[in-house]
Length: 352
Image 1 (cartoon, rainbow, N blue to C red):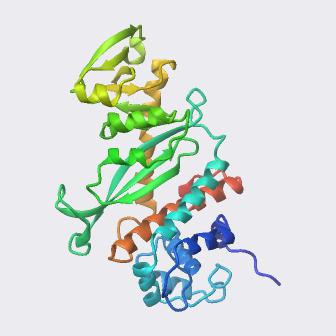
Image 2 (cartoon, rainbow, N blue to C red):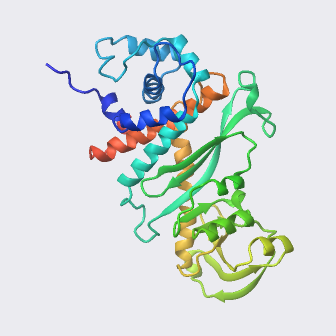
Image 3 (spheres, rainbow, N blue to C red):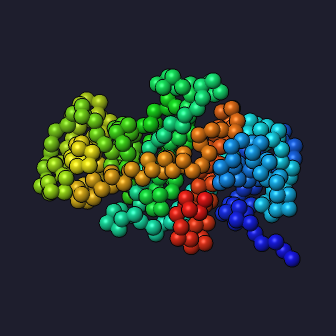
């Protein structure tokens, strides 16, 4: 009698073997770890994420405690702490990045009809980054001068359709946020919602040229002149809605087109927010609500740090850290995919 599929094998079925094989061919390794294939390595890291294992020894001990179902979990080779540690150090972390991109595209297709608010634009992304802290004594290669510690930075483009990652990158902690604007996929007609650390008029104009729309928080020192003012509903928290042109030499040269400036008062936090956008037609309340939805990416960072293994790491090398971060994103996406395909009504936290 054939054994029923395990929950873990049902979750990892979101990644097709043919797709995995194509990714392995893109990043070949001259001397692979003996007895540990790329797929077994991927399964072991995802198992550690989903079951919150504390170390490589913990992963191996947990899997070996059930030898009868080891094969049914998807493993085909031998698994030991030594070859798992060697694979984390030697195997190219870009393999897991490529797998994450495949899962992002699959999840996007499944959640393309999900919308947080029917009054908001259908295609909208929130862009932000988060610093993942490391121990300086264990990870000296990740020295972060601002905090006198070690860290890596995770840049993430979160789709507001299902709150799923649409693009991600792992960089050094001092990598400027605005530089990723030239790396993200720019979709014509899509909204990109960003904090003021992404206020770079050269790169924002490149988004404009690609047909994308953006909403970004503005610094106070930006010089401009008002071309046209529009009436606003102050009871909704709006203070002004203006069409402006940048006036300083550099900004006017970098972004020669007019912009829309919306000033909002946040009653909860008692702060004034000044937003810039290249969308001229939507109501100012929709622009303000779009920026409020940017908080979803902050909640995503908080969620993965609390429920997946991103606070302590299985290896000390830079490649091992990157493998673990990408495996965490893959695990999140696979759970989101099984949630949709199995029509589960529970939250991701309850499923885990």
